[in-house]
Image (cartoon, rainbow, N blue to C red; front, side, top):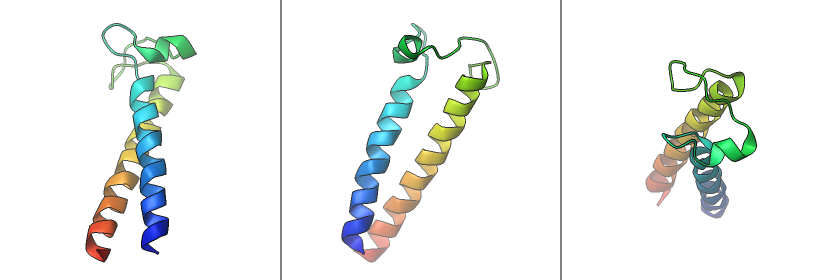
Length: 75
């Protein structure tokens, strides 16, 4: 079970890194290369793609944190 959770942790870490790099920053960042919108909204992006990117990033971050807690409890 621990091996499966460790594998999931690696996948979540890679996904989280990718999602964070997709966000547009002050200089548009990597997300500009993939056509993510630059409108303004509650999290800095107004387009549907940017809002969904925010939602996915938050969801993966929560899963990452929960998986970390589970791994610490098991070990």
